[in-house]
Image 1: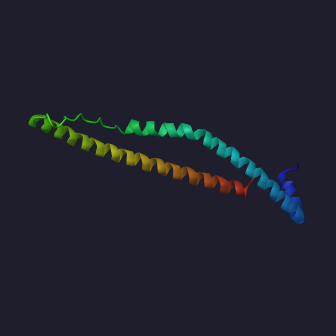
Image 2 (image 1 turned 120 degrees about the horizontal axis):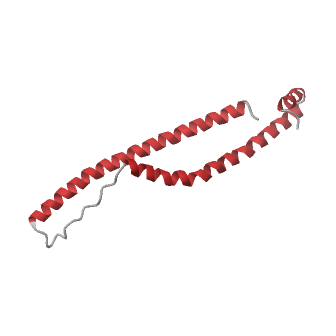
Image 3 (image 1 turned 180 degrees about the vertical axis):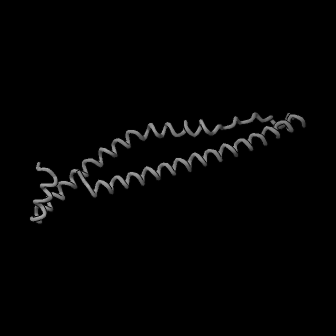
Length: 129
């Protein structure tokens, strides 16, 4: 196959040849996209398993408090349980806020990757090959 610039130079004079060159470049580009998608899909399970671990390392889920049975409980036992539930609620609220932040950060990172990928595609379209 001749060098791309030679093909373009010849195509400038002949509309049929120009169409053929465009089709060849389109076919070449469509061959590359599935390879890039395959690489992304191959990495997806690794990323998916790493995200919960990353979120858990920054966000610590509180342990569920052990509650008294109720029917046989005494006043002091119920008061202690009430304090445990209050502490648990406070810690769980902080944990949920942490998860929201981790989710927001992940979504922002994902958006950045997509925007960067679109830039790569635009640059490729301007100068294929």
